[in-house]
Length: 363
Image 1 (cartoon, rainbow, N blue to C red):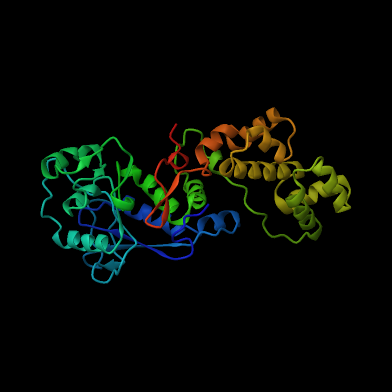
Image 2: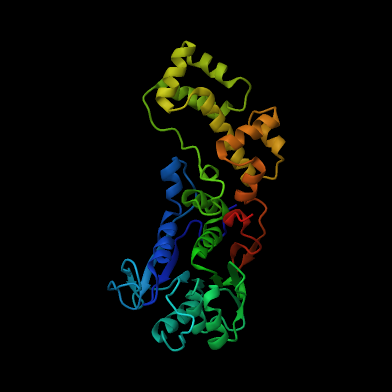
């Protein structure tokens, strides 16, 4: 199920850079958004329906300027030339806990309020929420921030309902104000926005591409079988096409070998040369990929999934699944499921207003 808004149209994201903006999160978000609708197909050769996101860095002036540390920040648009945004994000700012930021960004806060009044969704990462508070957008609403600047809110913005324990905090009418916690929470915000504008399926793909989530179980849970690469063995290509449609049938190796018309040893040698897999490994990979899709998108019991992809022995299926993915089928579903999420309409946008478990993968 894709999000209702923006699946076929460009969503304009403006990453607002300030003199205090640190570059890591800014460019991390830029790269993730640029990968939507692109990276999965490049890695796996599997076409997706997700449209791209247009993310640009905007600042008071377009000229590059030094960041508080690390590489310089190079804005792509000035505030005057940026135009209307669907989403504005203020990333983490280099602020000391004892600072008083009131009155610091008059031009930028006025610009942000205009974007909000035009209908933009306004977001922050980490200490960027201080800027949203300075713009007057957080008065009377729940918001989160980095724990280290909670004192700034207490002294300078007491009308904000600070929820510093939260990782992600959508708030306000139609959830048009979204704050996230510490600097690393930008990944949670990114996946939330991809879900909201491009659907949960694309969010899962982006999580797998960038290994976003709990890494304690290694990289295998994020991996996917790439689509077959081009080769010039017409016989093996015909066999691959047959396997794509019949991999769940009994004794597929014997049947596809017979289909090839080749001696067994010749078939196995040519199959591996063309695909990089032995025939049995190829069939197991196809079956496990289909099982992963079913675990992500359906509520079918694990035994039913095993049977659907060709395994009559559920115990063997579980062992094979864990060997190839690093996790059990149940754990994989917990991490990457998206079917059945409580997608509630928020101003015409289907948005997950209840949970992000399938994205953040926190136990």
